[in-house]
Image (cartoon, rainbow, N blue to C red; front, side):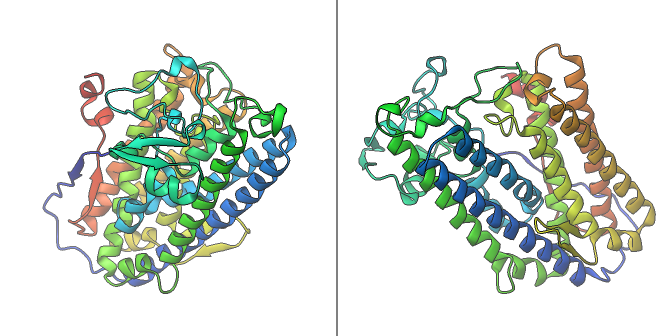
Length: 418
């Protein structure tokens, strides 16, 4: 989804301080990225193993284990989203693994109420699992064999439609949970394990092809994460890009923090759903895991600010941080931003706690649900306040190249309903 880019307007300030310690700060940043993408790869491999077990012996137990592995895989990955926006290598790649929302009818069967092809998307209800041959842009596509290449190179963003999401976490999520047909009532998708069963036990047809698609999508996720983990390794291009010019690296850190805080999380992922009262605007809409995605996005921002990441193995990556750099430049702005980030984590933690206690995120989106709206909008307000403090940090550090993405839901709410 393309969004407005808004340049920060920096007021006239005294001469900016020297960026003492900036090389160490960007090295810590790159080390955290390497660890977080490495953990994401580790968890994706565990998910792949669980998916293989499900396909080999479908049952309630193996399906539940695959779902658990998917939820666990989201924990480190969401913490990597703070590396988007300021790093072109990441942002150009990210759509392969975490694009949303998706027209899930491209992939598999959907409820009749979902509808069919639209003027905007001819393939919204293609159901490639049931359609081994189809025509795309005048070319006959043979999808008899469902492979990672078919998914990544042909189906993903087919016909240049962004909602034709064929790969990544959310395609796998749909294939594990199925559609969530509960609206704003409690409950996630409820796909039966028999959708992967053999012979007469197969439900909804094409179980062998459904398994082939799930396996191929999982393999593709692993290979995509292998690529990105390597980009932050000792010889990786992403690491080199931020460490070669430390000031540009600091700019990338704050651009990523600000854009994820404001346009992406506060706007597209949270405020928009409240405005539309639409559970389809949930980030993890099939699994009802959105509360965790929001929380770990926030934690990822905190990680890069304080220069600390707790890995999936329990080890801690730490080093000189942006927080240290800002404290040396302007202790008041550092204290303000630290307080704002802590407040955001508190608000996101309240959403997470409420959802885990049974008040699911889609229920929070119900029109007229005052308690749910208050939870979400309090977090939105905290993220916006956090962004204002990030802007002040940009000014103090004289980083005039920083750009923060906007969102109509925050900047031009009337356009949402046009």
